[in-house]
Length: 188
Image (tube, rainbow, N blue to C red; front, side, top):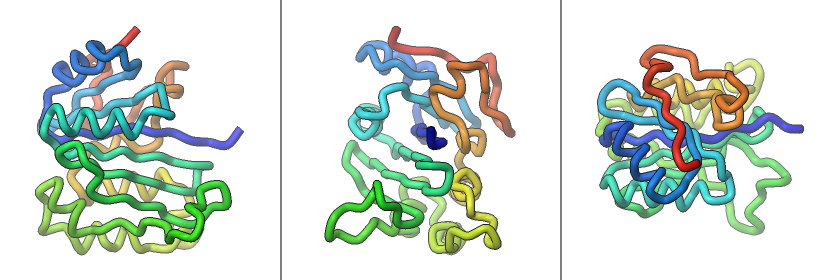
């Protein structure tokens, strides 16, 4: 079974408010508080993750960054602002992720940096997005790119490498800013 994970980072709402919103919609997830008024949602239903991220962004009027790791080597993201997709990214082509004749989304460092109010870090974000996926660049694994992207955007790095099923079997996020006491399960 290929390695994968997904989660959504929100900038603005309190984790408790996010948990109430998800519970009211019966969305099963774990929610963790993060520093700087941020929250990370580790959602169970990967089939509804885009709708969940869009709904969270619309309801809380905040950016929501949905990040997915596919097979351990491909990083994908969808950025939602005001409930609408504002940006998307795929780190490298993959046969099972091809979008037909359309080119893969490359991400826009200016858009994602502005969404998280870190315009002064646009060049750093651009480097993370454009660095080739290869063992010599440090980005062979998607989790490494995710962690560097989170760092460049000022988002919690503990989101990198962890998804719902990891937490469900007892593997908690690790890293600065994660407090296990704030982790809440929602929806069921």
